[in-house]
Structure formats: C-alpha cells, structure tokens
Image 1: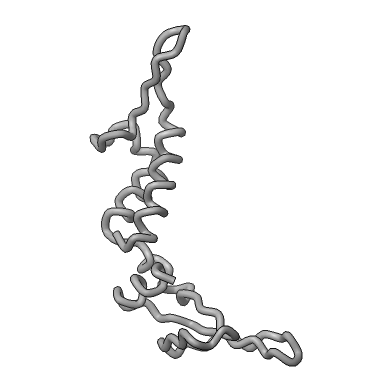
Image 2 (image 1 turned 60 degrees about the vertical axis):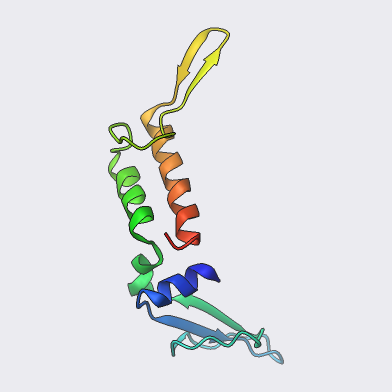
Length: 113
C-alpha cells in the first residue's frame, strides 16, 4: 500500500474496484482518489496514465540507467561486483549490473524514493 500512497502524494489518480461478495463479480475501475482502509472488498491501483508517478527521483534515475544499458559507466558504489574465486577474479557483466539497478529501483520505489 505504501507505493499507492507515495504515488497519490505525487498527484497520481487512484482507482478503486469493488468486489460483490454475493456474486463474486468485480465492478468497473472508478477514479475517486479515496482510500477506505476498513473495507476489504475494495481493490486499488494507480491509474494507468499515472504509473510513472509511483517512482521517485532516485528510482527513476536507476530505471532509466538500466533500461538504456548505461549501468556500466555509472559511478554508483556497489553496482560493480567483483568476487575472488579459485580461478581468479570474477567481474559482473553490464547485463547483471542493469538487473541489479532494476531490482534496486523497485526496492527504492517501495520506500518512496
């Protein structure tokens, strides 16, 4: 729920959907920007046009770096991983660094960064 709250704070439209308990059918998504925390029969999502607002400035930068393949030239600590093995040194590839950037971006987005 924290990602929804951070997106709402950035101005994203929040949509809700009701589930009918008797027929187990779902209603249409409605944009009303209201949270009802007590009601367990309601589901929430960020409006599809506002999905970019769920990411903060840091996670947006990391996602852009990963999607453009610019992780190898980044000067961010701990992205370059080097391990000492029996055969010698193992260095992470650029693809592995980009995957690490994406995972880190999703984690930071959950924290509101």
